[in-house]
Length: 173
Image (cartoon, rainbow, N blue to C red):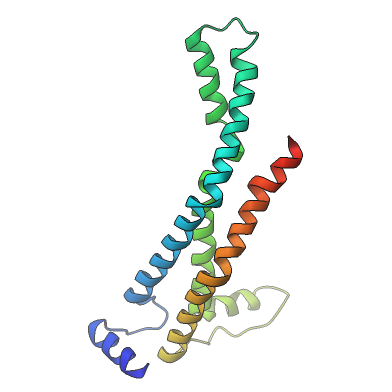
């Protein structure tokens, strides 16, 4: 591991441990892309399909049946139902919300100074903002975080999306 750090640092100068290393950014971006594409192709695709199916039946009832709408008016009514649906919008924005949460958690993992400043300014703890990770601790924290994203957070966000967009909507209909 030490040789890996030396070779990497020869390629990229690492002057400060408070700035994310370029290779760490690449690895984190790849992990986030992997996570969001897994969710988009699995549970979010199913949730979007089920929501569009229920919206189609709503649009059929409100816009097409028993109304004096012309074809273009009924089509506009259907488009408005799909465009202004909050659940469908939440499904589309779920991946961006996950990325934001994971990036914030990563920043607090890599730079514990942020966590200590938070603890110092709240009533839950008193911390001194003097803790910074050295290179080896930074490498270990980075690897642990990536393993956490690939193993734990992938399934956490999967089941959370399943609960939010599929299981909870079954009770409503």
